[in-house]
Image 1: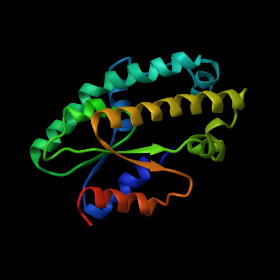
Image 2: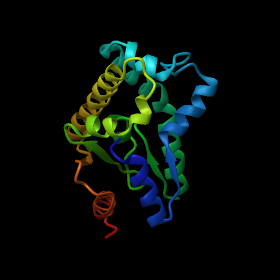
Image 3: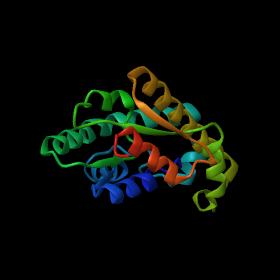
Image 4: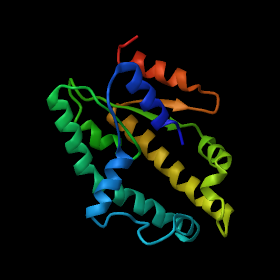
Length: 185
């Protein structure tokens, strides 16, 4: 809920680059592999009834299960020489750092404290119909904030670029900031 998909689509349109979502890669892999921690569970029940430490464990395991396929996709596209924008939450900076070269670089969007909860509360369609919407929101935000913190820590450790997004950050400012970071502007 930091704006990754929106920003990637705008960057892709501005630069005439195709855009691939790691979410789509995950959905495809789930058709052949048993990697979805929610498989067989309605997502509202998953977030309401799963312990917070299990939510974190599930996200880490899921990311590592997708890592090889997504990294291979990045390697393939970088060797073709055709630019590609990949967006999504299914990679960690330490995995991407191994791939960085003249053709592969990363810029991470991370949320300022409180932003994820604020955006979740504005997106009532996500938790509408839950038996315990407060618990769904609490657990989803906890998992997302924990993931966000991991991204920031790894970006710092791996010396990777990231943009901090807050509630006042306009999408155009994010796009322009990224274009500046890649030397396009």
